[in-house]
Length: 219
Ligand code: DX5
Ligand code: ZN
Image 1: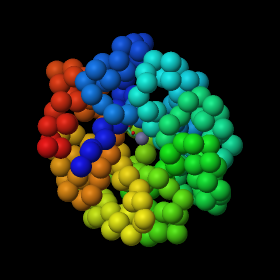
Image 2: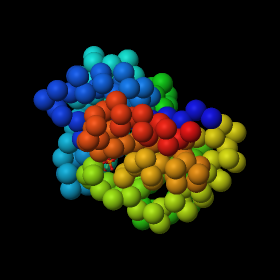
Image 3: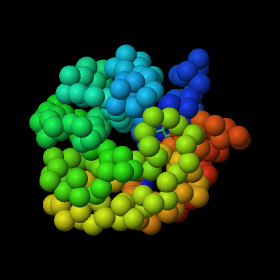
């Protein structure tokens, strides 16, 4: 089984974004995760298509864009143009999610659905055929460096079971509080793509060893 490590640049040093991304690439991460927050869907305000465009020039790695924004349908085009590989949107408070997922796929990107810790697995059941990836949040979205919520592990098992019923099972990604300990729990529950910010960019011994430690926990 191939496991995907997605480095969330939310914890990167933005004064040295290029060298931080290059270090991740050298260390062997698979994707670069870009957390887009609008100050409405979540309280924090972070990056937009402009940063995706900058990352696209820095690395050949797939850009895993996680949109924590209201009305994502208004901005998906900008992310597609900026060079996003994956565009993941939330179903909470989003009546247009099917159309938006289809639009993302139609543009040749991978379409993802992200669910908050309080959103039940059942919400994705009628949407799963529109998605290439399900992102299960293991913290409440908004900030990096939060503590993993262990109660979400049971939901990953449910999402895994739903995914197995699909002709092409979607990737199951997890995001929030993923470190060398929690990664084994979510892997056992069925996740196969793992987002991490702090455990990579704030790893005391540096990015390279942080990535190696996560990778070693997946063996
Ligand atoms: C949280 C973001 C995450 C965050 C993860 O809202 O979606 O991607 O950067 O950070 P860590 O790995 O530090 O929990
Ligand atoms: Zn994220």
